[in-house]
Image (cartoon, rainbow, N blue to C red):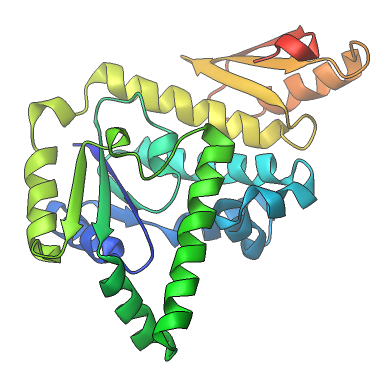
Length: 268
């Protein structure tokens, strides 16, 4: 029992690898369906969620706190799947949310740029130059997004347990490598690591519930006890705090809420 996150660039066959792994292990495979789920649950158009997860910071900044809102919705949807265990997630951001959870196998799939260009040309019916331009732009935007949001470079191999180059290694062989690796003792779910996921998932759902009231909050959870850290804007707003507490307490699984208000320059 484990969680597998697969990060990849466009036309690197990462989705095919993810689906093959899920089939072999009998795991749930999720990717774009998380966006649809978050869109429906939080009444946010899917196109905006897609933009939040893929577009560069310069574009997202037009929405003010829109980025924080949309990312919180996506994070809540992903972690709600992760807490059920036995899941393969293929998409941007998944491994960011569970970087410290030991039973998550983090995989990066890469492919030669020329091979990716060829696939883009075939699919879109465009020239080599056009295909190369599209892929270069997509890679750049994804990289800028992760650097802006987390200070993490998705191309950094140290973020992953496995980096697999799809060339000599086929999709089937890559899937076998991943299945063999995730069967190791190091990636098996323990009561302690499962608690970490459940706490992260609860904190994410609470953040999504209160983000419209106060986007710049840090939320953590432990055994149903939720801590919300926020900064003052002008002066302590008791009414706002009560509303935040009310919304947080309405989330299933929350037993207690503590709100910590700090000066804006030292808030977490």
